[in-house]
Image 1 (cartoon, rainbow, N blue to C red):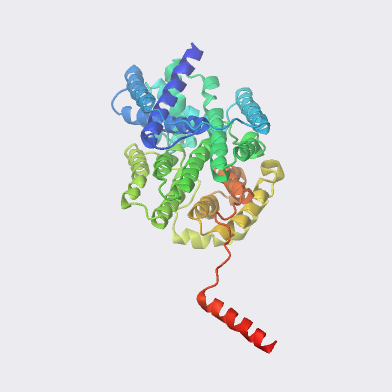
Image 2 (image 1 turned 90 degrees about the vertical axis):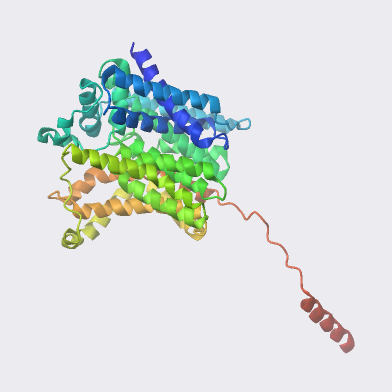
Length: 473
């Protein structure tokens, strides 16, 4: 029964995502199989969790599950009818086959690690606790949960993308099975790996380079084995997958006439604040990059409507928390100028802690050193709006995250940094792989330098000089 339940849950998730992907692409862009799988998973998890939340105001129990299932299957049928064009690669070379086999083994290892280890703190006490409460209440979180001081440790103000996907599995399984719920997190690793391979291949126009970057993702310890890694049940890597989708699509959309990727960017952008509270910061950065691309490439003013779905989700969730009198986190002091002036002396220790984190080989290996070199290579190419997008998408969140610790309410704010900074950096780490590829695959100019033809004045001067030389002779 568990196998059938998982098949039904994952099938409806992918069906909903594929239908949304087909509606966004509209047969006007060929996507590789890896891109279609990754986007289907991301859009499916976002859509189903939102549907569970919205329909939860109207129904519960089997009716709620049935409504969401009908919408998901209907979207899947629309996707099947539209059939997003599939990009067929040429016959792979032997080393591409080897890299594909390596990535397959790495994915299997991540699934294995997920199954043999228990969920981490966030996985148990932030996400699964919400999923279990909702499952016990017919698929709807009890309103009393949000204002219960005894449950404040579980961050009731956090959005519901991850716990409601666990809830979706529970509804199909008919029980709250933590072991089966673990499958969600390595699947996000699959989506992130596929997106790294797809985007780096598009940036470099070399399939083998995309596969190489996807294989190297596994060798960043923070992503695979450290606390808060992709298999530990934290929301940071799923958030990084959505952020990578938004930034990568916006890079592709920065080229003239590439409106399909801009629509995919808008869909990925909208789901960022629904995955985790930190997603609001990433949404702000990605939205600012989107405004830059719209103005720089002179897109239609209608493109600004791309930010509307995210704004609706942000405002809707805030109104819901206000209506349920949800408890707010006490990890930070009020964000005002008075607090900022009082804690400016933290700036240098915070910067020192960030540098120490970058240099932590057990956590990051040589990843950030390589990214720093890639940034130096990218700086001379700032005229390209796509390069600006990737640089800002990587650097701006790091600066904003570090600035948040100026308002930390912890007695020792450096302990706050040490506990969470590595997971915050993981949210933007996949963007670093795109910058590395840009540095590796610097393309020569499309048009070779032409020899300038002399004009009439130059010819006249040359003729007079030759005449003078003859007369002297």
